[in-house]
Length: 216
View 1 (spheres, rainbow, N blue to C red):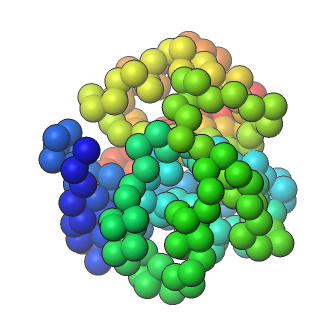
View 2 (spheres, helix red, strand yellow; view 1 turned 135 degrees about the vertical axis):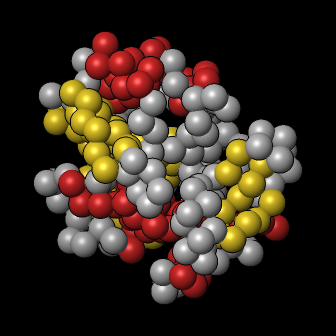
């Protein structure tokens, strides 16, 4: 699937997929969006200091590098799913680490690491990535936060089904939560029907709302 690098309004890159007419991030600012949805309302909203995170949609690696750089005192065990990896020709040209003043070698280490192999990025951040689809993903681990960053329900409806979202519920620890940029009514109703407490939060720039779903 062809992917094209674009520049969003905060100066950071994103990818555009012509076949799907879909962007990986908000054109109003990929870093701003990720910081708001997955850092401010994700890792910074969880009280635990040892946090297991599951990312659905590793994509460009933006959420992972931002989590690494903004985890504060937390120790993070990060699992990322990505059945359609971004090619080396693309990810080596992305400007995320430059925009957030991170080490380029660290960003590339996330991408270059072996699949299905846990590695230690530093003493407080371990990383594991899998090409398995969420529908088929199996693990003994339970997670405190799920970054649900799949393509939109219109583009990727198979991952927003009740069956898949119920699996997310089962993968979470008690008092864990799922966080997503998506605020569509049908998604929130499905989450509620599964048993989540659904919270509508202020959205990132130029988006009215986002969603956090708590497992009580």
